[in-house]
Image 1 (cartoon, rainbow, N blue to C red):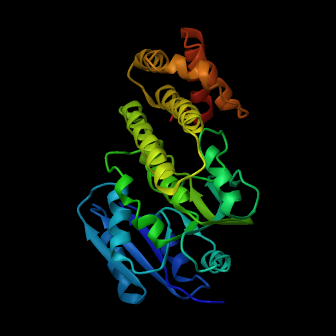
Image 2: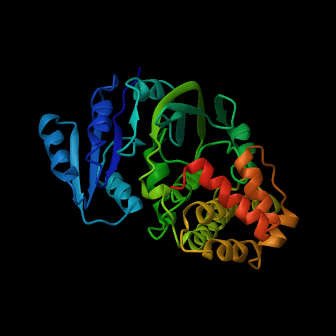
Amino acid sequence: MKKETVSIIVPVYNMVLYLDRCVQSLKRQSYQDIEIILVNDGSTDQSGPMCDEYAKMDERIQVVHKPNGGLISAWKAGVTASSGKYLCFVDSDDWIELCMIEDMAGCLNFTAGEIVCCNHIIDRTGGGTREKHGLEPGTYEGKELQKLFAGLLGNECRKVTMSRCMKLISRELIENNLIFCNEKLKMGEDVTIILPALLDSKRLVIMEDAYYYHYFYNNASMVHAYDKGLYENICLLQETILTVFKQKVRQNELAVSDREIAEQCGREHLFLLMLVLKNEARGNRQGKTYLQNIKKVCKAEDTPGLLKKYPIRVRKKANKLLYLVLKYPTGLTIRLLRIAMNVFYGGQ
């Protein structure tokens, strides 16, 4: 098999409890032509010194120390410091199977514009849940690949998971699209790099089975904490998504109509609004402000129109309840959502 260097980029912020598990899974990869870029994003615990110790013990490891700037700024710094023709992103509280890079590299043609996707396991206390992409396993190129672009977003189960992780990506697909990455975004930020990368791609591989990436579900993580500014974040994300679609369709002469773009963006916005409702019902502990905030989101200027114009299909029980509240934000439905969130998440 032809060999090319794969750069594994790991943003690190206060992960002293989990960092060793992550790094050991990278060091022991069966694919040897790798470089590991640990980006210490201003950690206040011992994560920084740990990164330096790893670098002393393994010449394939490089450490970047930077002031805290958030996740996007961290992995962007890793991209700048890396040299591999292909990039792979791993979060520092996650870990990967030892065969992951080798098996993914085995799917490459070593041509421009490639993305190889494996599947992942969500690891929680008490067991794991296997998650896969919505697309059937296989290789997508040419017209078959272009057909996918009309439905990348706006689905309960996305055709391709928008996480930057669990993928092997041609370097140019990342470097050429850094302009879309807004460091103000704190949720959904991966969409702003993976969506344009997909729209620029020439070859997409969805691996069969290949549950190689372990996503650690950490209840203490900021990802699962209450975010007061999530609605504003969602609105900014939607603006970026629309900009990406319009620029890429024009630039690459993609067969995606304005109507199809509007449908994708409209339905995606509704799914993202459901995350806002979940965030309020689960995490907002300031009296009844959760109820007021949910009503405000559901009755925002564009929400009723989107619900009428772009109805979405939901199958998961939690999403059915969230969609019900989005359409009918009464005191009763909102309180039922609150109870359901408390039961499922144990009041966390």
